[in-house]
Amino acid sequence: QVQLVESGGGLVQPGESLRLSCAASLTMITTYVMGWYRQAPGKQRELVATITGTGITNYADSVKGRFTISRDNAKTTVYLQMNSLNSEDTAVYYCNAERTWPRVGRYWGQGTQVTVSS
Image (cartoon, rainbow, N blue to C red; front, top):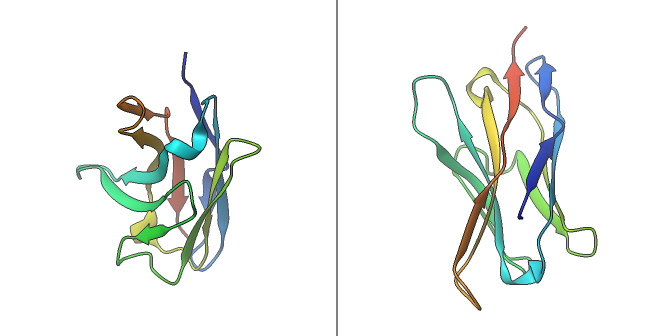
């Protein structure tokens, strides 16, 4: 059974940093595009960042230059380093794993709360 377990969320003040981690119980993890999504109250879930098995990254415009996604395939873990946080970053952050080869797969973690408030 595939599990994605996020950790690292919490309450921080504007301008501070957090690092989220996602431990994935996946085999052949390099075949997955790993990503972070977030959902704020009353809003739809949105893409934050993705990273391919070879390390190609993609970011939402709202987090470019502030957030960095990375992965350690040996540890089957994905990270999201978040700097210069502001109140608009407050949301539940979800880890995601998707692939189309050798079999289609799409998995979500349970989410971790990030709250940015003074």
